[in-house]
Length: 114
Length: 107
Image (cartoon, rainbow over all chains, first blue to last red; front, side):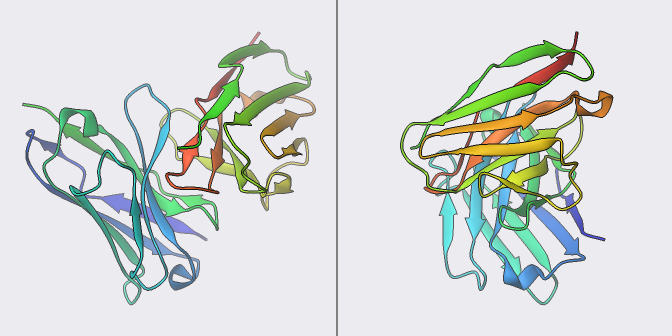
């Protein structure tokens, strides 16, 4: 059974940092590009970032470039998102997954508020 | 950025109805188009990939079609469990972009 479990979401003040983690199992993690999506309350889905198989190529949506860093650990079948300089508009449920396999986790809530 | 214009934004339909949702891309995206279903508080679930390929385990009443810039998701006979929000996703160009979503409600 494919499982992706995100963790690390929390309430943080503007300007703060968080690190999201995504533990995966049930599929060959190292064979897929992996992504983070987010969904602000009551809004649609937004792609945030992705990373290639060995972590050597990373892509970001403009609104997070320079503030967020995606990474992966293929030995641990895990994906990460380091989020710095957080803004109120980063408030959302963050999902990890892969566009190619089409699997996504249940999400973790990040709230940025003073 | 490629804009994905999805329509309608919502619709009301009855069980057994045929439902069609469309996405129009602002430029050609080849076959790099997927459709997702999302229920409240749940993860997005992929239904269709590569424009028309059915995800394993997804009922055959779901189908996708289209080419170039115009794409369609069809539910041939709406079932109670299909009331949800549907999104298209293009992954041909960065940033990957989603359509705005179509909420399918019970009439």
